[in-house]
Image (tube, rainbow, N blue to C red; front, side, top):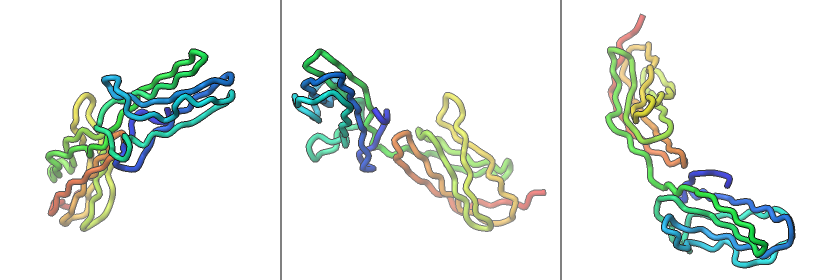
Length: 178
């Protein structure tokens, strides 16, 4: 598969590549965690030896599937079998307790995201990438503010599928630093 996690909400899809060593009848299906058929990407079609790529957009017909783990399975009439799991994730990450501590010049927030940045605007503008503490959901980083004034901080969290959410805190104050 070309990715392990994707978001149909962002019009993403996953691609499965199957290589046949000889002419064979090929079936490619998507199944949910219980083994139920969700989508048939190719149904018992005879193919020559070669490489074939099939896409799934995370939908069953026109409806997006629920978030979860799905298995893409390819079978051939020659007894070939391939399966690989992919995660569908259309849920935006959370951002809780976004804060700026003027005493330590630190930005922090709690999130289930993979990465977080903070765009600061006001007396000066910049973007800060926060670091996620190991084995926790706490992100933090030095704001690097040196110019006295009021700031707006927009926290942006991004998960593994690319889903994003934002939270804004306004009127963060910074005292000039030496």
